[in-house]
Length: 164
Image 1 (cartoon, rainbow, N blue to C red):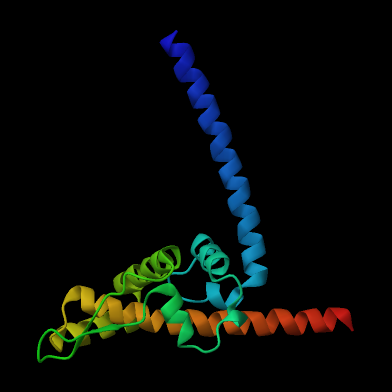
Image 2 (cartoon, rainbow, N blue to C red):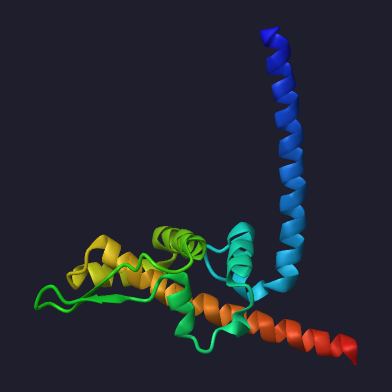
């Protein structure tokens, strides 16, 4: 009986794995068309790009590039508890979007020379590891916003071409 249950469970897991692979392939095809600029960011692959697109829910709803970091929780919050001017991590904003930016930041911190240089420079300047990572995430927020704007312009212009 235990062997039968294990076999059924294994069969079910194989079916789920096949379904996940099919859905990932379909998502990859769609994201490649919708957000090529977003996929060009180092560390942003299909699932992260899909999460960013879904959680942003239309980049045109933000009035400026500075409103996007407030939405995703990467805008710095000043701390006035001492004479040293510093900022702390924001716990507000869309946490799912913040997590996607965090994944990109960790990937870039590991293998992107520009991000590694920024982190090393900030740490040498006296910032801690989390403070340097917060700064990297804030800069990535701007990069992601520009990529979303570029993708929106590209999709809008291709829609106009198709309509003509």
